[in-house]
Length: 238
Image 1 (tube, rainbow, N blue to C red):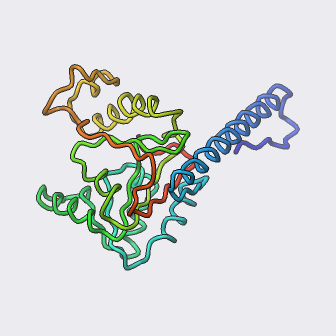
Image 2: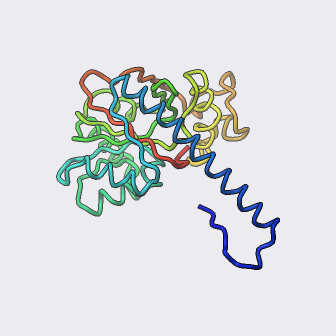
């Protein structure tokens, strides 16, 4: 939050600029709060538990409170989980982690970790997009993330920054195709067309470079899965 100095040396022009900056920041915070309120309400209508944390630090605290220290935790491939340092916090307090992104892991060990995620006590993941009416859209390559989000672990916690909120499913698909996937391809060093152009050209995207194999939409909470969505008031992940 910007603060105005009490120094007598501040010129009227500088003070006016600071006031405008503070007003802009306040307006942005207000809009984020109103948007999140709508999304949380609609997620709850769709059967999900939904929470809001203004900062990543508050999000981590809320999530750790939901996870017993002796729980086996499955980790979907997620930049968000690592960006908020949740994986580090879980590891430091002694939770058993099924993590196929663990540094130095072999291909076979990564496969075993993905399989273990399906039988974890709690599964953590992010989502590619959340609509204003409370639906979650995801695109996967292997499908281990979306599979565990739907069925297997009795408890699923989905963590997402407010940058992933979109108007509807049409906008969600555009976001995933033209924002999340190109950025992920760039991170992975993969070479689908979107990694070069930054936008989706699906008619030119073929195996083996293609990353988008599986599309899921969670319109309601899966019947046998206790699913909590934690929205964080920051830009996180892709």
